[in-house]
Length: 141
Image (tube, rainbow, N blue to C red; front, side):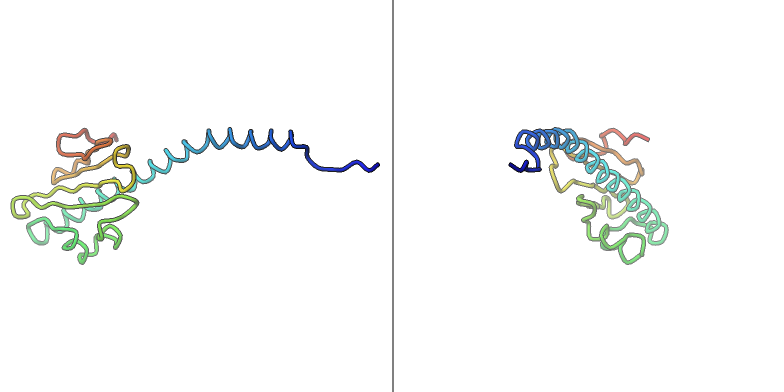
């Protein structure tokens, strides 16, 4: 009688179990890395908005909205639309354009992700799970 080659059912089950354990360990780390990348992109977006606001204020003596900053060439099209790296960006003008504040709000899982805020002081602040404001702690350096 000829002996058949191949894997037994037990061997296949062991391999599947090992792969399941590896996936259970790796997926949360991958998710955290992805969230960190999106948060870093949001902070960079707020830095770009702050720089654009400073340049706009030098030219027009007031701060501008996203729509006003976009034609100046200081914002990329995605950021100018207010939707970049899974974050929504908004700008609010205060005192007739004498002051501004900008928020970056996560599109996915806002109750777990970091929210960011910057105003004309140019200090980027964050809050985890809720909108950030001027009283939130600054991002770590």
